[in-house]
Length: 140
Image (cartoon, rainbow, N blue to C red; front, side):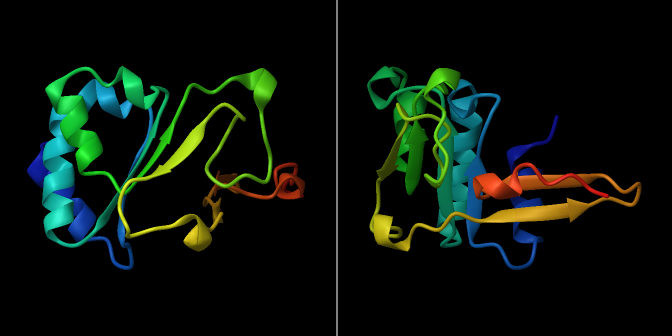
């Protein structure tokens, strides 16, 4: 297990990032620790984005509400495979919603990006939100 202090230091030691993104498992199942981490990174003027399977009306604990209050962008809603969408940055299915909770980001500034990681063993890993035509790329 990594402490919040160790994790925040690793974040600060990473060059070129503007913030953190919390994804699954389920960040709101660890709301107390992630809330503390969000406080630390926000104090350094870094952003916080969270992907959750919860809907906003389901945050019922103090720690969950505290974590939302420290978030710039919240992508909320359960992934529903039958409602899969493409070309919608940050959304996996049509029932999910993007909530801009601060003025730091707006829909007009939203960008869908992806990264290709080529490992030493030749594996190609695609992360982020690629266009559908890039999702079928198979290494030669």
